[in-house]
Image (cartoon, rainbow, N blue to C red):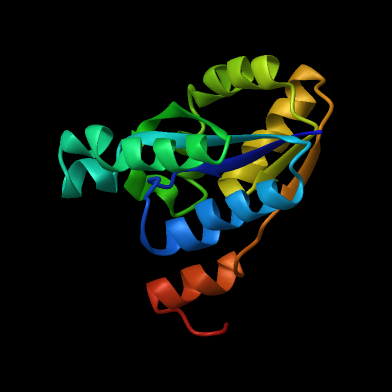
Amino acid sequence: MKIMYLTWGETPRSYGVFNSQVISQFIETKKIMEDDEFYFLSALPIIHSGLIREKTSYFSTEFKAVKNRLNKAKVEFAAIPIYAPQNFVTSAKNTFKFMHFGALKHFLKILNKVQPDVIHCRSYHAAFAAINAREKYGLFYKVIFDVRGLWPEEVALKKGWDEK
């Protein structure tokens, strides 16, 4: 079986929550399912927190550390560009589409190369991309959606809205 883990709009990190909840979890799953093939794909905004924090050294340090950690576990790692700044990650009605504009063709190239049986999606954007590509191009794979939290409640809390 070929399993792809898909993140969309997040900056891959070898530390913190991304390391513990994403990379470490995926590597542990790989250890249990040693006969299966594992791939990790990050759709990365062209302007993201790595460029803000580490500037151009992000790719030679942090991105490389993520890639090395996954490759050491025999998980192939790739990234595709999203032609939007990372702050569009908050999925408002008017900005959701920007997190997908132009990225689908890059995603399709990876899908055709890997031909996954399962895509484990970390976010609403990742699930939307996986389902959209599957339907648009007649692909065959299962989608696992890792909700992590309740998006409406998270947005309401972030924006200071009450329950109504």
